[in-house]
Image (cartoon, rainbow, N blue to C red; front, side, top):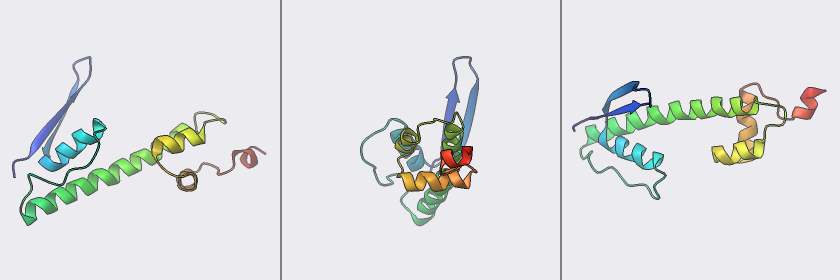
Length: 117
């Protein structure tokens, strides 16, 4: 399986390159960033080793993004005492009960009024 690379740049010409991306993960990532409807199964990985490599790399990306999302949720809640938790939950695509578990995990109070008193 031929691996791909991605290059990310900004308007100032700064670039960061990532190598050895499995093609199916790269395609799925592009679809996710573009908010494409539907998810396609792997097309380039055909044998067991290629598929397990794709699965492993995908799992590492998911774990990293989940941890990053939790940190971003906690940061959004810390922006002020009246941060809109409903908007945070909608942006995170999670029910309020899960949002509160994530906030508590990162040291944020479930009930901000009780925490203020």
